Length: 138
Ligand SMILES: CN1C(=O)c2ccccc2Sc2cc(NC(=O)[C@@H]3CCCO3)ccc21
Image 1: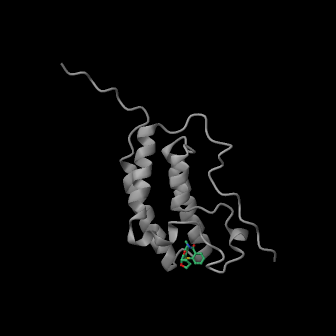
Image 2: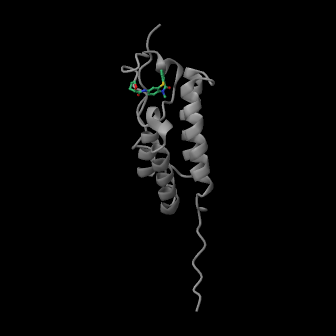
Image 3: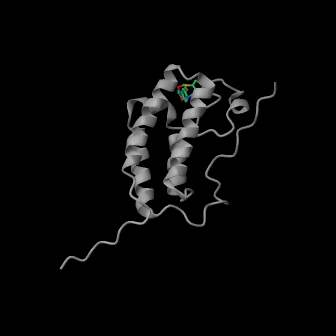
């Protein structure tokens, strides 16, 4: 009956991890998100769901962790992730929020499924944490 307030935006700059993802993984993550942002179906996911524009005052009563591509990119740039799995986990929060609020068989959910499939393909190429030291071939 009472619209829930918007949760605090992420990342929480006062609670960043001590050992963030190494730079080569961070870069791959950022490039993967940038590639997904260019997809035709990415439009509604580029920014946080706007409850005023969409006239959905009760969105945060159902969705406790709003997530979108700009927030994931911001978290990558802020070194808020320790592992690539945490990046994928946030992407899945965005996907599941969409399924929950709109229905799994909605047009918008088919769009989020498409961009998730693309993101997972990019993440298959994520370099391992400890890159092998380059051999000095004489
Ligand atoms: C992911 N998602 C939604 O999950 C959502 C939530 C409630 C109602 C509709 C939708 S589809 C949707 C549409 C936009 N559309 C827009 O942001 C623009 C601006 C307002 C209308 O089009 C953004 C997010 C979104």
